[in-house]
Length: 582
Image (tube, rainbow, N blue to C red; front, side):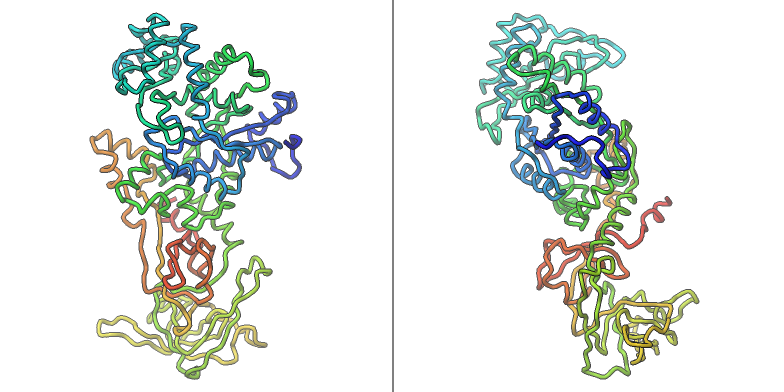
């Protein structure tokens, strides 16, 4: 472990409140100036961008102060957990640029947790309850009304011990009994009203097989897992504020049962921070699973999803996501962030890293009538003007080209600086051309545009810097490749889909019915008949591109040299704020 760093020079302009806590702990010599964090996801789905904020904090704190961050899978619920999710979580963390010290699992501690629970029964601090979940919920009372003791609260210790063993036998029906901690049924903190700490599931676990049939609850497993691993700073989101007293109590009880552990050095301390909430975004893994299972999206990595793998597939860079998280910061109150702020961070990052190429998404034929037939010239195109070291590539120019249909108007207003009869425009990296007319089909649709070119106006030639107001991108018809382009937008048409989902469910709709009602019908348009320059043919999937004058795109994993597929990442400008009236 490296020496902790205090006030790292040029690291940040100001410290967030968690960094201040960590630095104060280091100054006071807590935990022998040792920093250890953990990222503890439940492997019941793919990580979303909200998890990226927790990842950035957990790993970032450890990295910044010379500590270690471990990955711990909270695999206490075998009903929902799969190896696929674990592998995806590891991939997402690596993609974001972080490395864990060790990988742990809550299941590593099942025996210690079981032994701890047995000791609590022996101490009279836990008992087996035979009430149904509905009875227990009613008996707990309300935040303003004290609960009532369970009729099983004072059952003999030996009887609870025997029943607890039976809970793990595989013979007991799930839901028949639970183990509850005996705390305070009148506590104003509802979590203290004899919380359930073990329940019967009778199903195999992906790591422990059939060894266990009764499994610990999250609140019981989490703090002790932190304790056993030596976590110094347990960083959680704000919904765990009310859980913290229970976290601390269980840690204190555990200290009493494990005198062999150096509690003064190992005692984890929980600190809470705000979640990452985005408008037009639904981030509950439970609801995302409904979308996937019912085919409303193509999978967890559908580029309209808020999962990390979906943002990766859509073309977001890890640097842009982390830059956005850094800008919004960490606080002790929740807020709804505008998705446009994330898109702005993506634009800023991709402007610096994306390769510029030409692509025509809605093509119309342009013929340069005075350009020699059969002649082909190679024009030089800059790969990235923000990074001259990335060099240039060549793009072919010929008599017959493709341009964007929207770049032509037969009768144009004065402020239209693209192609129109009698006006000049520059074809990027090539020549100045003047439109002379167009040809239409029987329905009046323009099928061809004619123009002449000025041979002395080729870009880069002496005296070729004659100014015209419009510059258009183009492709040579004989030297480009067909492509499919997927134009993505918001998946939801409501600003706060979480609240709207709740409202619709209160009206009697199922989650699936409510989601179908909330979905944006224009969230995906697949464009065929598009063209791109040959330069992109052999680029690997997920390459960051800017289609000149159009937006930022990337190469989809579905793509191949014989069937090019691109995803729109984000436009060159923020159009959504205008649409939504912001």
